[in-house]
Length: 285
Ligand code: GUN
Figure 1 (cartoon, rainbow, N blue to C red):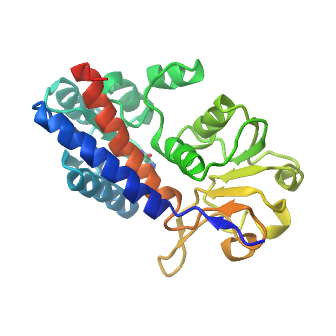
Figure 2: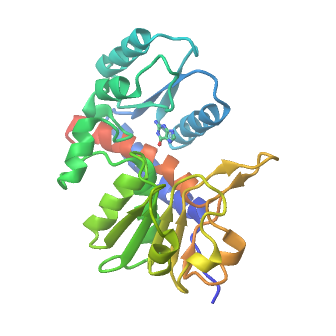
Figure 3: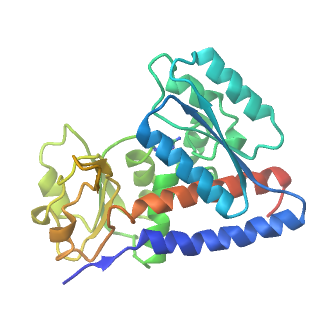
């Protein structure tokens, strides 16, 4: 059996067309969503991510700005910028790219984002709402994964799902979303005793640890759905997923490539959440 390829690039393209139509409809009412991104420092990967988010936002008719602060910026000055964006009525959504430099507390910054503009879903109020099943901003990578599964008509109810990684950005929220869809979810992490035993039984595997090759064909049950969130650059700068794609593709039921799987969906969900933020504050829908 050769797996169905979950083509995130194409699915994202179609989804963004739908968002573009919605942005145009909002503009006829006099509103244009605006995404403001705070980037502190010069990390190459972070710069590339925020540029992609800005470009994608502009391509569907949104306004987007990057507030680029120096690596040495104090926590107080980052907070000042954030407060300015929180209060700026032209800004619909705010995203602070992480990681932040050591002198800036990530927790303090994320707690200072206006929850109504928190398009990443990283504010404690929004995280709390997610865990009690209230409507809220959901972190973009987990939301993108669920949209990929939904688009491919993959049945989640009653399935055994295994998530590798317990981060606040991906592992934990995607586990919660799978649970909301009635999967039985197991989270694996660095202290797990026997990863393979869990993986071999899984109907759905989501790997989000950034360790190329951590999921090989011997770990995967034939027909399982395999979602690869890894994107680690190799020595030539080529992005590598967590999954041994060429081998696992031969036995999985469905699989995401890297690049072109989860990545484009994450950016699409940033746009989705920015549109949602604008609609919510205008009382639309
Ligand atoms: N760094 C890595 N992934 C993300 C993300 O989804 N949002 C933000 N703000 N920073 C990130």
